[in-house]
Each structure stands twice: as C-alpha cells, then as structure tokens.
Amino acid sequence: MKRSDGVGVMAGQTVAFPDESRLGRILYAGGQTFDPDQQLREALPAATTLLIDDPVEEHSDGGFDRFERVVEIRAALLEILELMRAVAPTDSTMRFNLAEEQEARLALETAFQQIQVLKGQLYKENLALRDEVDRASMFEEVVGTSPVLRAVLSLVSKVAPTDSTVLLTGETGTGKELIARAIHKRSRRSSRAFVSVSCAAIPASLIASELFGHEKGAFTGATQRRLGRFELAEEGSLFLDEIGELPAETQITLLRVLQEREFERVGGSHAIRANVRVVAATNRDLEAAISARTFRSDLFYRLNVFPIEIPPLRERRDDIPLLVEYFIDHFARKAGKNFSGVNKKTLNLLQSYPWPGNIRELQNVVERSVIVCETENFSVDESWLSRQPVSEPKSPFGLSEMLSVQEKQMIEAALRESGGRVFGPSGAAAKLGIHRSTLESRITSLKINKYRFKTASASKSS
Image 1 (cartoon, rainbow, N blue to C red):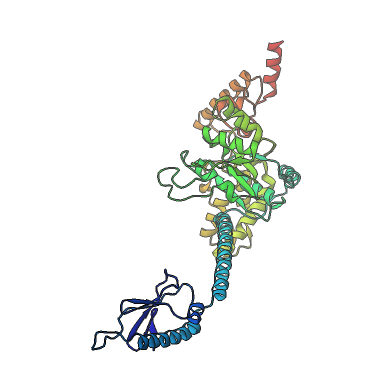
Image 2: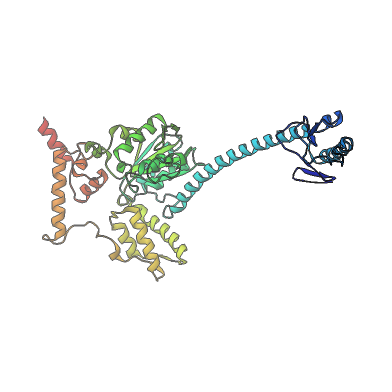
C-alpha cells in the first residue's frame, strides 16, 4: 500500500480523506453503505472520512459477493489505520502544537513591536548624529578668557542644570549655537539628543511639519508619517536658531508647546507630550519685532525666561590671539601643515579689525590663509578683510566721512526721539531697525554721547 496527498491505494481500491466530513457511515460498496466495526470507529480520527468509490466486483449471476469485499475493505482499513497512527498527530499532540503556535505568534508580535520601538529610537539617534556630524564648523570648546566671555559662561553654568528655557541673543556669527551646545552638555539631558533647526532656512509652508511632524496624507507629498524635531529631541534639547523668523501661525503652535508641553502633528488629532528643553536664539531685536507686530509678545515672554546676550568679537579683542591659534591648529592639521608662529603684523591687523561677521568671519579668514600660506609663519592677506578697521577719516571730503556723518546724524536723531533709550519698543534700535548691540557699537565708534539726550529729554519733560 502507498499513500500520497491524503489518498491510500490498497488492492485496486481508492481511499480518500476529505477534511470537512466526520466519521459516520463511511463505506460505500456496490451502492450499499457499511459501518465499520467499533474498533475502527473508535480508532479512526473523528475528522477522517474514508470513501471507497469503486463498486464491489459483480459475479456472473448478477449478485455481489459482499462478504469477501467487506473483509477486504476491513483489512484495508486496518492497514490504513496503522499508517495514520504513524504519520498523523493525535488530538493531544494537535492541541499541544496549536498552543505552541499561539505562543510563538505572540512572541513574534511582541518581538516585532520591540523592533519597531528600537527602530524609531535608532532613527532619532541617527538623525541627531547626522546633525552633529554636519556641524563640521562647530567646535567642542568655547575659546577665550575675556571678562565678557567669562560672564557668559558663568550664566551658562548656572542655567544648564535646570530645564528653564533659554533665549540667546547677539549678532550673527557670535557662536550662539556653540553656547547652546555648552548648555546641553552641562545639563541632565546631556546623554540624549541635541537637535538643531534653523527657522530661517526652512520655507514658511514647511516649518510646522519640520518642527512637529506630519501624518500620512496631511498634504500633497506626505506619503508617510514623519517625526518632527520635537519628537526627535525627546528627553533632550532642541535648539531653535533664528527664532525671530518663525511665521505667525507657527508661533501660536510653539507657544502651546511651551505652555502645555504637548502638540499635534500636522494632519493629526492625537496630542503628543513633549519632554524637551528649548534653547532659542536670534540676532534680531525681538522687542522691536513685537512693536512691528511681526512677533508675538506672549511667545517672547515664554522664551525670555533666561536671556543670555552673546558679545560680538570686537568686544572680545583679548580673545582674538587665542581664537587665531585655535583655528590655525585645527585647519593646519587637516591640511597637513605646520606653522611655527603667527606674523606679528598679521596679529595686529586681526586685533584691530572690527569683524562684522564675528567669529565665523575670523574662522573663514584663518582657514583660507592656512590653505594658501607657504611660509613658516602664518600670515593673512589684508585685502581679504571686507573693510578697513574703523578709524578717523583722513580727508574731510572722503566718501567714508560723508557716510559716517550721515550715520551719526541718524543715530543722534533716533536717540533724541527716544530720550536716549537704546533698546526696548520705543528705543533707538527699534526705530532704526537694527540690533541694540550693533547700535551700541556704532555709538562707541562714532563717539556719540547718548547720555546727553537723556538729560535733554528729562529737561524737556520737566
């Protein structure tokens, strides 16, 4: 006897095993039905049906030798039964296998869920790591020993251990992101991600999706769910650079996050809790922006919990030699060069230059000089500096003098109108549309006595 795909063959008989039937009247022979004996009925599995589909051989007298065929059928059934016992599982084995299968399925589902969680965490960490690697121009340490820098670092050491929101202000290129990273590294969140985003570099139509993420189908092109920067910075720090460029509608959403510590993805309806430390930065005068109705006052007060103003490089002239040495060492190692020192004339030039681009401009000048310099002592081409250091004009009829005179008149007019006040909604900086530190620098350079306008204003009001 042989069996293939549920069919057994014995002495020319075909025996089939349909799955849906149950053991009942199972034999068909010559148009008659036959019940097997009790041994077969008890032994065969309840889900098995045997069908012998060709009739018993007919004798010449037209009758059927039923007894012989029944004996043959019974023998065939017993042999089939032995084969089924050898190859088919028992009921208890089947139940055991089903239980094992269910346990395995549950274990696989649990493992899949864990893989999804780990995949999400890995995605977050990878994005944060890419942000770190992309900041090739950002160095690990703050370089300098000037009093103004030490004052800033003192504030950093005080606010870093807290979760308070920090607002960094200062001109472009002063190192606001470097200070933000210093705050993160000295905080309790230092083991988690530091995520940076420039609000000015992202189109207004995409900034909400960038910060808070979006659901699949939220807008044209949203083919899948995307995590926002707030989710990527979970339990870490989020640095919002150029916060003054944030669109009005996104300012409202950010205000809600700072107030209620929750947000919704674009196109979503589920509130997501936000456990993120926010550090914001701007080179704009936000108080002037409030007066111009381009920035919300309630958001400003939420951000301005702990303000730190980063001084421009021209107020840190004592730090320039240290910064130059630091940048030379960094870029020389990358270029495979070695310098024995810095040309004295070059150092004096760098210290006298006002650096309108601040540390970023100094870094670029040093990097370019390292590439082209072929002498033993490091030197800088003076023509690379964008403008000459501020000095007294030599010719009374020169263009620079005319511009300085006009600039001085405009600043004095603004100071006179504001009663000598430099910053604030009604200050001279707001009226001129420039940052207050920039105005203070110009007042010093042009030798303007701002206090005389306060006296005049006081006399006038009295």
